[in-house]
Length: 350
Image 1: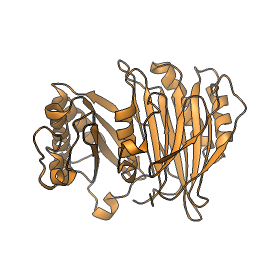
Image 2: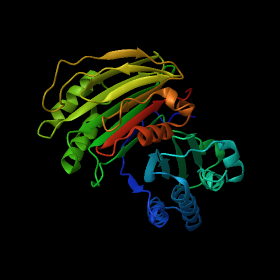
Image 3: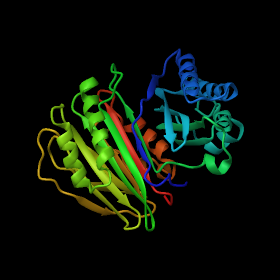
């Protein structure tokens, strides 16, 4: 996995969520084609994306107990892709290698079609826990690239999902990556606008705007800048973390109910926040620091996800791509009665 360009910023973009249902395959195929045309894909490439998304939707319809698909456009400098995420709550795939080898698996599991999806995609990743659920990632660049370029992977990936009945999400995230003397420095923000709907989403939009102009500053100063920007809004819970590979540290400053931790193996080191509401009630801020091993993965998420998940519940997940890590945790720990948002940071050596 290679880092993105120095100084590159990434942030939350619109996600099309589609719940499991009788028409999922048709709806997903239509949305996939719309996004593929939007990024300028050729007719042949659009057809490949449609095929892969239809396979994923059909798989869920046949075998999943519950599940959903998410489609979005992701961007790197000079490049754009359509990204597919498939999440379900069971039954899982007992033998991923066999499923990928021939595209099928034993009856009653979600292995059907994995091989064809992997062949169409430029980037493909899947994680499954039998009896728990499966998360699948497939990314399709607007222009096909060779194998070396196809594997360029962002250090940071996030995912948001609105509460049922809403089309906009009050949770949001943003990140900025840069080069340090021994690798990368990543500064990341997670924001949970109070409440739901457009007014909560407005707080998230303003938080992202303030982060863009302050991302080069220490986490505590970024939080202060966000507090000034969010005055007059509903306010938000906010956390800002800076992961520095050259120093081997993560610095974190948070206000409100944003969970943050560094995962290394089966160990989860929590990063604490202080009570308050950014934009309304700014407490005395504190910056916490924990070690960041080269294999460590930084995770921040809103209280739209249960904080009871454990790395041991997802064997092998934290060796996967950041977008897949975010999707699997959201899929298994997300609560549907609230907006949900998660962002994951993983270095090139993770």
